[in-house]
Image (tube, rainbow, N blue to C red):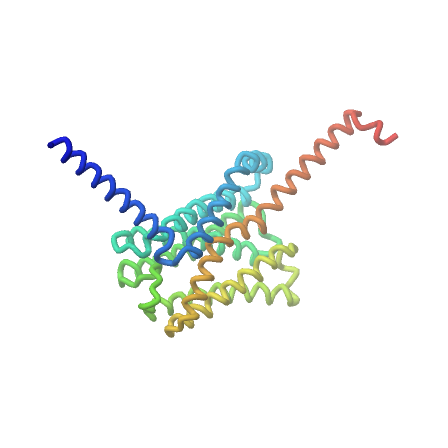
Length: 297
């Protein structure tokens, strides 16, 4: 009798745990922002981290041969931001869990700050023009970016923990005008900087900027994304339903596509050019050794 009762309790407990696990999985995948919001950001961020992992050994070898402080620093920062962004995408259900909102705010603060650091440092690098190279330019760029992002972190921390304003908890039913006003100012500054670079590119100061067309494609994409985000924040602050939907779409695009865009624009060419450089070096060495003399006869 006793054993039967114990077995019944164990069975009920395992059933309850299974149902609780299924409920948590359902909340993680479908609740809060919905399936497509969660799936698109998770899949994109996971695939990019997986790609970086597969290329890690090859990339480390190239970086060790190239000895470029700028590329090494950006590659390390990219790894850090990518891992944080993957965690941010995986734990989006925390945003809708009252007991996890502190953890969600901290994770969001660190993730967005890491991505903002990359974004600001690249802007500072572009604005330095053709003179931006070497360890001195890297130190200057990271110093400026660190100050700007540090001020941004302090300001957001005051809003989050001092004033109790939920910056990273997006609720359609509670628009919170102060929060959206802060995001409007944030997006105005970024949009203005990207617009300024595009203006320089089409003006007589064009020669002061790096002569790489891919840089301006990146600036154009980021200008459009920030302009859309600015418009969406303004609409959401007034309580417009379309503004909230547009803002959420911009957030998904940013977390899913920004880091791959950064890699393609600023790092992929370095690794490809390094491959070509190594191939040319091997070809020259073989030619000097006489292995390819028959090809020239």
